[in-house]
Image 1 (cartoon, rainbow, N blue to C red):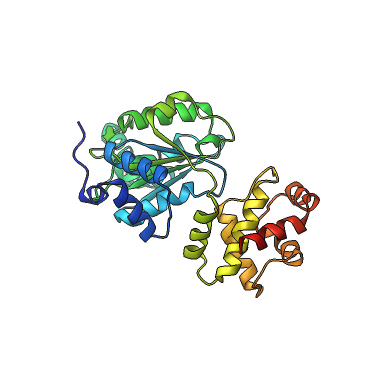
Image 2: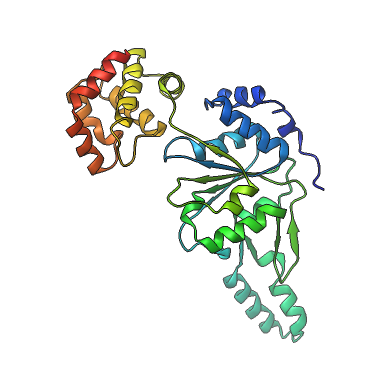
Length: 307
């Protein structure tokens, strides 16, 4: 059985407490997400967050680290990632230097030399091993980002680690987390994550926020933007998402667009402002063409209706 979680987790002893703590760190979560985070902390289960790019999945892990005062260990997944990048590897250059030093000293005890070469002083800990072999009072937040970009084999390996929170280094020993890290796994759903991994995790889909929540986010994350401009930006983004773009703008793009318009001195949205700043909110050429074909005047009208 795992030991009880430290006080940093117990401070988040209710869904309301989680929601308030997130808001205090400028992350406005809806009740569903706050509930998923609360359950993940309480049950000590990994949390799998799926959703479009830019909706705030990665930010959940960053905010949890700030709330708990824990270290955040980030494993960025990509095609071809393996144990050496994710778990551990040996520092071969230091081992070679040590070997040469021992040879120069005339030592001939090969068994002792081998033990020295494969000791923890030469072990390079990558994020997964560091997350399990932590010695702080507060367990770290482990962010496994964009797991959908990794290969099937790595996903299966990851499932084994998240099942019992242990890793075996054959030359040394098995490392086991007495208290599991706070594990947040994200996916942009470029491919389906296997059912076995989903069963191991608690799951939450983060969708695009509605108008009122997006406006509230803008007030927090872009306080220098006027109320009128913030409302128009939120309304325009809502209209853009209805155009059936290949990559609809996420919250990150909404914030970027508001900052860009404010930096240009805009106090309201018009067709000219949309045209020159479209790259701040729509990041694909084909989507920009679809937006123009839909009509910038329609986007402007939606923005004005929201003011």
